[in-house]
Amino acid sequence: MSEDLQKQEPEIPKKKEKKQGGGGLSLPMLIVVGVGGLVLVLVAVIFGYFIATKLFPSQPVIVQGGHQTENAKKESGEEEEEEAPDAHELMYMEIGRITTNPKDAPTTFVVINLSFEFKPRNKDDEAMKEVIGKEGLNLESPIVKKMQGRIKSSINNFLASTTMVELNAKRPELQKLFLELLKPTFKEYGFKLYNVSLLEFIIQE
Image (spheres, rainbow, N blue to C red):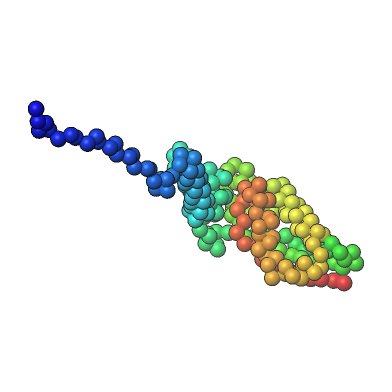
């Protein structure tokens, strides 16, 4: 009996291709890269917030009714002062000569005289009506006398705590310095101080 079928050669199993080791990243490396990216994002957010707060400061706090709180007004640099009134509306008062020694010169005397322009904060206040008569400010009023005493005390303390060198250096700006120094005193007694004039400034050695 003849064999028509040819003997089949046994199949040789194909070898599995080796995976290339350099084509991917290991799991630990991926974790490190991910954490590093997250850190960079956080740093960028913090840095951006810092820059934003410097370039765009927060707005003043607004309370109910649309009015700012006193602290918000101070932080935003707003002044509570209204526009300067007409010069004819302002009251006038001179404090008289004040003589005292500078801080570092016990044998030297400084003589100073100031004048003030101001007006009442509330003309309808009962106490203010006693201070302001038909002819203007009543200099004999106990309130005015107390205020004058406080003014003189503040000026004396300022001069006595300032050296001669400082006084000479500050002389061009003394009016502004006294204006800021005395505003709280005028406010305490119901007035708003607008101008301070230096009538006399004499140094006697």
